Image 1 (cartoon, helix red, strand yellow):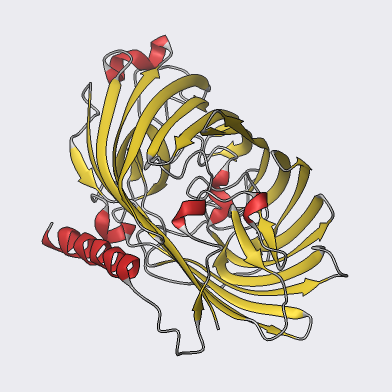
Image 2 (cartoon, rainbow, N blue to C red):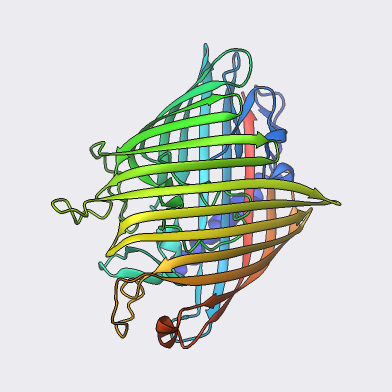
Length: 433
């Protein structure tokens, strides 16, 4: 617990220091005004002429520009208190967090960069995970499945990606080639921690592993992304074994899996994407039988709307996975909204996810592997009590109501409520050299 508070105080103090930092204009460095918390979450309209919108990160990223060198730091940290109804809701204090460091420079028509994504969740989550009723996925340090909790993400390195962005012509068409010992495969929707409708919510979606954004942390990724006008085509090959979240490692594996994703911008306010991935033995347990692989598919749409001084962000996501644990096929649907005006932020998440009795460890159900739909309805509010040019400090709360099929209700003593209260700090800062 002492380490927990020490880590979080360090992160919070770092944000405060960044938010008050003043640049020395006598040096050959300028703070960029394009990427600040006043323009977050970003949209296509926020990108400069020498930037493109990276949909999978919801962020403007550089195109090759003569003599350009750039560094960017992004991060957020929550401190969350949880409580809820029923025997499976355990009051806990947790800290979801992430940071990103991106450094790059232009060489002729190429923009070469290194992107580091990190987290300290291995040390800021309880041993049994971040409390979230009906959540599943991965195993803890003792080999026990996380149950009604979200696993920590790979710590301290969630991703390490080397990229080469090549400009094609005079517009924003480009080809991006990348390699990552650990990074994002070209599958799934925008990962929840980057999604405009989800970045204020400390909870991972219940469909995280059900065909949605589990591929945002993948081992040994080699990929390409081709942007032509309003269309983006992405391919990658990678190692299918999922990282073990309680281990501190960065393994390199064989390239035995493939993924493809297509992104279409219908207008500045409407984008859709779809993906399909073949994943070889993600759990490392079925190398010699017919269940040695998964097919993961997703489709998603994102829109923004102006509403009399407010901005409405909307995400609709479908995911499907085959051969997940003992189930032949599972599906998930999530609808998210963010309604934002200056410091006021109202957000919701509506989820429909298939679960089995075996996954939820409900032994009283005879058909252990028959999927049934569970539902989660969440409404939350975040108020930024202090806003700087490069960082925001907020407080918030959320309430979730789960609805279960009759065969699951006894284990949870009905359809449980749960609640969270939290503080958060987030920031973004860029420099052009």
